Amino acid sequence: MTLAPAILRSSFELVVERRPDLTIRFYEILFERYRALAPMFRTDRTAQAKMLAGAVSSVLDHLEDAPWLESTLGQMGAKRLEYGVTNPMYEQVGDALLATIAEVAAEAGTAPVAHQWTLAIGAIASMMQAGAALALAQPAQPSMAATSEA
Ligand code: HEM
Image 1 (cartoon, rainbow, N blue to C red):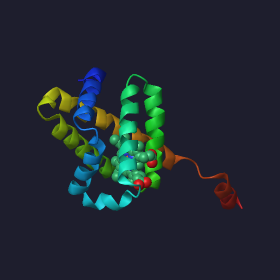
Image 2 (image 1 turned 180 degrees about the vertical axis):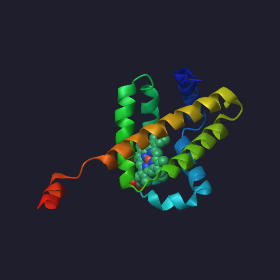
Image 3 (image 1 turned 180 degrees about the horizontal axis):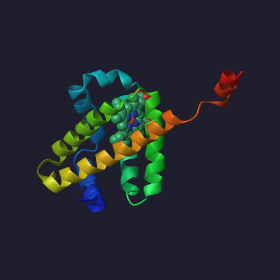
Image 4 (image 1 turned 45 degrees about the vertical axis):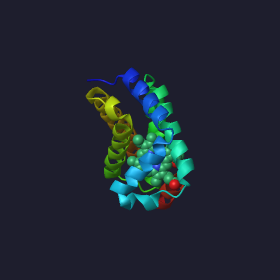
């Protein structure tokens, strides 16, 4: 089954309507389940939650725009390398995001809705990880190259 943008958008609209502070709840669930991640997040929780909500809705606005997704998510993945994010952490964040959506959607979190979010989060994580891998594989800075030639 492929991504169904209409299901993703309508279910996101529903969960945000039911719980405008959805991403605050996400961080609660994330840190309940994966306490070790908490110290990585230093920004004020409310500001962080707003940025996350903005990021998810931009992604939903661009589901049909593969170049935008690849470039934006790739850069986000590269930035997360600097934060010390490793690949297994994507599964933890994805698990907490799915749990948050399921909790808030309640009876509306049907199997197709859950399946769509599983697919979407997997695709987002892969693009972020690809961006991180690309950043890691980039050639050394010119100053370092000059040093090694000397
Ligand atoms: C679904 C994928 C993700 C989305 C949409 C997302 C979104 C965001 C946004 C919008 C920000 C704030 C702006 C920025 O620094 O870019 C942020 C920061 C951050 N993200 Fe993510 N993120 C995702 C995955 C992850 C994962 C898997 C981790 C691993 C723990 C992570 C760790 C962080 C950290 C440590 C920060 C900085 C927090 C701070 O400065 O306090 N993110 N994220």
